[in-house]
Image (cartoon, helix red, strand yellow):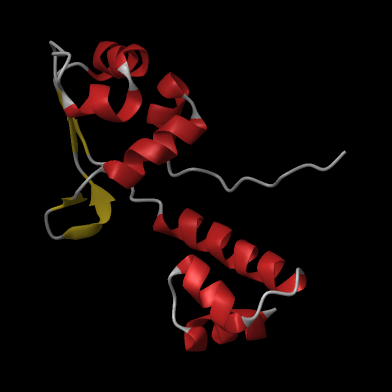
Length: 125
């Protein structure tokens, strides 16, 4: 049995994950705009009354959007953008793809990085 390591979420994201789950919280974070000049945060307004055409419903579906509206009604949330979690995942995938025999150019195309950057990541390990 293999156990997959999952990095600890920032507290600002953990609060959301406690309501809708880790995967959905990370997906939501990835869909949100940057919070002004704070590039490390995203911004989310959770309305008190949730119309069916609201962005939260579009992103999460009605059931999970309602959970957020109940938990954070009327609040403006500014959770971390979780880029460090994404980078760690991406770098592990680059190593995995290289171990499977993919060329640097193929990996670069898949992960949308330059070949130079992929080589740099591979050389760290």
